[in-house]
Length: 201
Ligand code: TYD
Image (cartoon, rainbow, N blue to C red; front, side, top):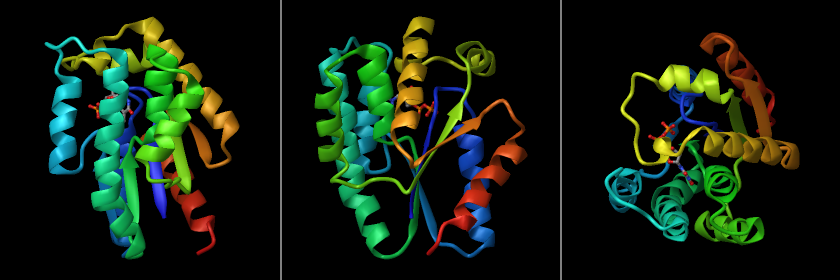
């Protein structure tokens, strides 16, 4: 089972992922969690380059670096774990590339991004993508105390386009489950685990 979580910064992904991880442990389901970009030595190094606010980065370079970090994580960790029957939970996956680089940055045409996503994901597709939907104002209230990384300094208009990207993806792919991220963490968690329990196998 491959599960991904998506949404803009401040949507509450991390809380939901820890709740799901604890739920898996209680059910004795062996599950591994990885964040993107990251999850391997090489991918964490690429993450540092991507989030370092001191550096200017060309949008195509950014697109390729997110994809490079992903390719390493999928081949080194995710594929072997899935082959061994483990569950894998991803804190972001290629839908973030479509939303942030495709819609937000407009780094490349969406068809090119789809092709790159397939390549970097080594053709893996999530069984479920939980999209925690929240507005820009509400999300920025939640993140206002934190220091902003390079991506988070991209401005409100950028985030509005990213949201449009996630919305479009969710209407395009049945694996997407859109959840209202302004609900209580417990209510969201219950919706997620209900769906996971219903899934055959
Ligand atoms: P992170 O600190 O993990 O943010 P969050 O906690 O909100 O997930 O940083 C990841 C940042 O990188 C986040 O702003 C989203 C962005 N990102 C992309 O722009 N494209 C991608 O393909 C991925 C995976 C992340």
